[in-house]
Length: 595
Image (cartoon, rainbow, N blue to C red; front, top):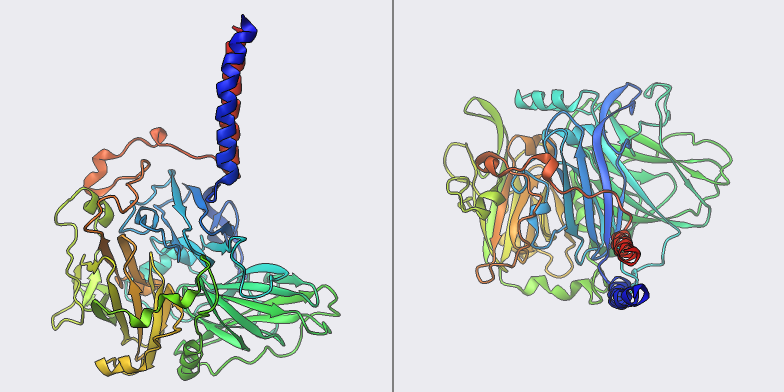
């Protein structure tokens, strides 16, 4: 009978739906889905109409707002006129360097194609950002924020703020990114930027002699008496910036995934690629609006006009526009101030972060170091007739086949595991040389800066402990100055001109990971390398190669046609996928009953 057939189908379906509901209700690691189109759009950040890179028509791009352990799926459509990769600055991609979005791990997304990133923000909290990693594209935009919130069971080490605000500060050039990269290739220095942007907009007209009329500026609206968390990212390409707010203190609470000892600063030097979180109390009388300022630091140049970005902090009860002089910056060329400020940043060893246990329970100062690398950078020099920059005398050569692909398919000759642990006494050369990292080893890296400008270095896949920095040349005796207890753990560190910075990192994340200068001109000319970390005991310790992999170089013949590759469409959460499954089952059931 029809009703009996219906009952026989309904019973197992009900059990299935119950199990699915139980799974989704109790799942601790939900999925979130995003569809992004990366394209050129028009903007006038300094009053001059330019072609910039936007995401879904936005410049800057959207903030990726997620929570610890969530699985993130981002379908990226490349509507540029050249290949594209997005990299996720500070996301550790546990055992999953396939999603890192740099040339050593991924083939570029060709123009007109899409590719879907899928990664988990495993055991992380904090403030990070994403940006395009190829072809000098970051100079045109394409960046946005990443906010990883604590799970509800892990309390913040401070009162929950009344609002969360993301701020991007950056140097900006009126030349397009293609012109800038051509200049760099020809040995032409970037020079002083044409302006400083705050959230993609130019300066408020604080001085009619310095700032032209009609330039759009950014306004942040706040309520008196409330406290806001400001996540500030230097997404520029070459300039250290000093961030400050007129008449307000900045209470530092987090940097790049680590809660810090809470200290109040009048201003903070934020170097290229770095991110900080501040709590700011709106405790002024609002007799007027207040200046938010980002100005150039340590440029080593006498031509500084136009290198100040100014936005407006507007109280809801403000009695008028901001006026008067900007809040004073530190002395432009005072590297001692900046270094002492950096040394003052400490890890909050009593705070929980992604896990309930305190951050400081790692006791990094008691671990035996297994590998030491002293990495010396050099200014631009000619190698084979082309301008390049080097680390330990090697300028990174990008092979047509990504390193990770070559490792997966055991292709010989693509790279060598022989990066020197110190400067070699030989002429500089192009090479694809990797650090052969010891799985679960503890590596000490000393960055020695012989350039005239501040350099920032970043390591994908890890947070490292910044244990020391000083002027002069690092020696074995320098270890006596290390902070072996509460040096902050982060993924990007500055190295001052004529100085060194030392970091310690536990190599517990299998994969091939990019170590680079965040200064875009240095990176583009070869100041990068990769660290290979292989688990010799467990073949499946890494996530398998994705089904949607794009192939190139020596593996181009494996590439499927774009139309055959799986594409996610924008869904709000894993619940939508569940609803789709339920809908299909119900339609099948109804069809069976009707028959």
